[in-house]
Length: 241
Ligand code: APR
Image (cartoon, rainbow, N blue to C red; front, side, top):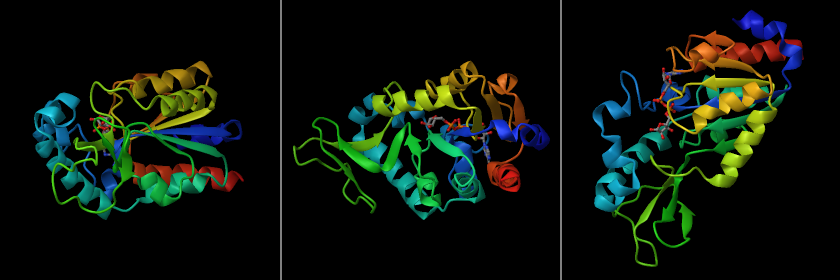
C-alpha cells in the first residue's frame, strides 16, 4: 500500500487530512463507536443534543468536564506529530472532527475544527464566548447575562460553523491527496468531504484498523493504527524531498 503512495508521490502537492476520534485513541482519548467507544455506555441523545442540554445542563456539563480532564492530560502521539512534520514537504491542511486540540499542540499550522473545541465555551443565548483551560467547578456555569453557558461544540442536529465548513469544502475540492484517518465516516456532513475530493480526482487513502462504510470508495487502504502508519507515510515524502 505504501508503494502505491510512493509511486505517485510527485503528484501529491496539496494534502488534506480528514481526522476523527481514532487518531487520538493512542493518546488515551476514547473513540465514540466501536468496542470501547463512548457511545457504547453513554446515550448520545442525553449528552450531545441541545434538547438534552436544556433538559439537564448539569448532567451534560459533568460529562464534558470528565472529557476536559482526560483531554487536558493527553499529549499528541506519533500520528499527530508526523502530520505536523509533513508541512515541511507539502501543503497540508487538517480538517478535524476532534475537539481535543492535539493537532495544534503537535504543531500543525492549518487546522479547521469542524465540530468545535473542548476549551471553547459560549452562552446558550447571547453572543458571549470564551476559552477556559482550567477545571470548571460550579456546574452548569452561568454567563454574565444570567443564562447557561454551553460547550462550543457541534451537537447532533446542529449546523457546523458555516465559515469553517465552507473553507473545508474548498480545501477538499482542491486537494490531490486526501488522507482519512481514524473516523468511522458515519457522521454527516463531514463524511461528504471525500466526495468533494474525488470530484477533483484526488487519491483517497484510508488509515484505520477497521473497515468503514466508505472503505470501498478508497483508492488505498492502510489497515493499521495512525501512530504506526502516518510516520511511515511521511517518511516517503521526506525521502523524496
Ligand atoms: N488509529 C486509527 N484509527 C483508529 C484507531 C487508531 N489507533 N483506533 C480506532 N480507530 C478508528 C475506528 O476503527 C473507527 O473507525 O477510529 C474510528 C473512530 O470512529 P468514531 O468513534 O465514530 O469517531 P468519529 O468518526 O470521529 O466520530 C464522528 O461523532 O459523536 C460524534 O461528534 C462526535 O466528532 C464525532 C463524530
